[in-house]
Length: 342
Ligand SMILES: O=C(O)CCC(=O)C(=O)O
Image 1 (cartoon, helix red, strand yellow):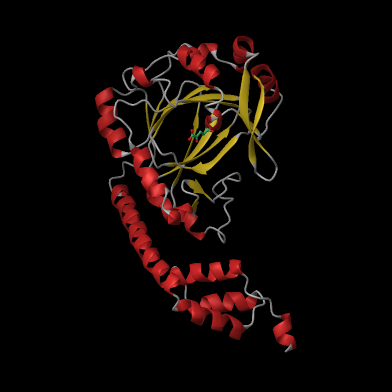
Image 2 (tube, rainbow, N blue to C red):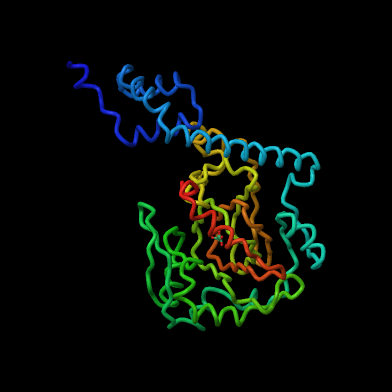
């Protein structure tokens, strides 16, 4: 009787964890041993497991988990096969590229590339500095993403001049003018895109403004590991940014959640990732590089990326390729599926 009173109840959170383990085919004995070590009673755990194992929800979930495992297996094999060519060991660095080579050998095969000279003569590389933003757009109201200590993000309004003062006052990771504020900053972004040099060899001048981003923030700004729903042509305008990039083939190794985010924190580098919490992560190949002002980077759809500003930084990201990107439509279909939400 006393035992029963002292034994913790198996809360809905624990039940969810147990169901998850069962669906992922973790051995019954392992689940039992783990829970007993957490203070649960053995008979109590056994009773729950027995009821859960034959529950129709768990049986349906097990089938779905098997399907997902088969897909993960296939992605794993694709990666291994590709690696045999030796061509994908590193992200390729080139000076420039012509349209045909780019679309055939990179865009169409989802292959990233760094271009060191492609945008070197862009005028905004000389003109754009935080001080220029302050002088030319100082009194504009702009919207920033701010992040609280508990990683809650919210929007903050201030003038461009105020924002520039903040980002120049030292490293921080809680002020960012990024893609999340695109609608509110429309007028300012329109003007910035109007100023931007064009790149007709690779990007369609017609669609230059559509859904492109200007990313402005202090040294120390971190964008956590995630992937984008479209291809992006990323240009580093001012300051340096450090990238960690992972092929989409490692989907199950980066612990995805909420659609396109990863649970793996990379602030302490790849070595700093907790191997107990994220045991599969060590199997993922992480490409690390730094973009300098004037560097461009083709970031294909689905590639995981983690980014840190090493200096006060201005970057741009363009989606206006000559090939239409209709992936968003497919995403809408997949995104509505509740199982993809976690
Ligand atoms: O420069 C950054 O902070 C990363 C931007 C990014 O991840 C994105 O545009 O998808």
